[in-house]
Image 1 (cartoon, rainbow, N blue to C red):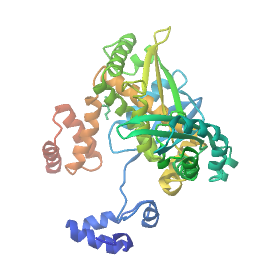
Image 2: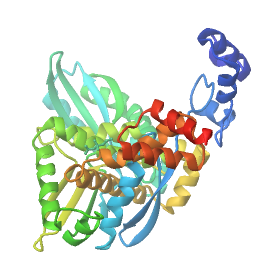
Image 3: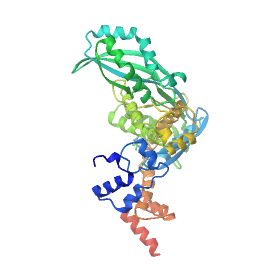
Image 4: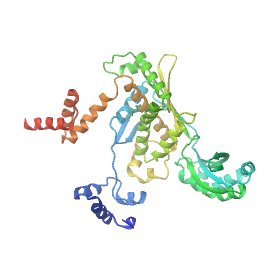
Length: 425
Ligand code: MEV
């Protein structure tokens, strides 16, 4: 496989066909590109042999800061789009979500080692702060022109098993970019000067994904009445449903095993919009989980409590490093269309939508988990997948799925039996 990157697509496919024993049909499937053809994919990452495709669904009912949105979501898991839409439909009754963001300031880190006098070095770097910021800005005049750029330097000394380290934080307003490129370039630019000032040696120069200065807060009110009416023939009163949700929330807030899954549900929504719009969802994941641990223990990214009327208030707060310039959002055709569907013009607005989807997702999961459980809805969708796997097509899919759900026997062999019965008729 040496020099794989230099080979043409056909040569690469021939090699992997031989190596992995792929069939002609599998090679033909790899060649089905969709909107992102080989040329685009080949420029995005290395050693391309195809593109992976995911469903793209639309979450409905989202009203955020008074504006209606249709929200594109891309993921492999059933029920996620439905849950986000359900949560948003209940929030919509009280006017939808309210969201606000802090300025888009990211942190770049420069690690300095072998400094002779740590205290003096910190003072000297602090004094040179303005010139260091100016020097960083020379690396990105366009960002500065748009009102962004490096703003501030912060320092700290940490004790480690390998001795002391001086950590410099360069705070950069990245405007509508995710920011990694701009920040990393600036860190590399000022590292030699930091070495001179501190007398130390610089090593890592890289963005931090724990974007504590670039966060979104969103909130929504879910009323007792709307919650009660959201179940067709529910056994629980609205007040009771809210108590159940609060029990679920306090379980998560005080138990890391549950908090992890609670936050996973939030990230179901967040990642799905991030993937649809070509964002670095790993950066969002890393930032979110580190943020969830900032108060000394890992806890929930959302918070729930009752207002004076006894309605449920849901809140979310998390770092939101998303961008509309540079990266896949510009090169992936579907990501561009997803952004257009959202009708957003700024990265800040995209971040607000994403946070609201996370909150909606989490609220919907807790509503279901603390009442009827999620398997009922999940199994309906699962049954459809099983029916397709058994070979059902068109209307047969729904019919067989419904029958298996009714029988509480959702299995491929049963789906095949039902399919055969209908073919024999
Ligand atoms: C499944 O992908 C997500 C949930 O487990 C989230 C949760 O438990 O809150 C349903």
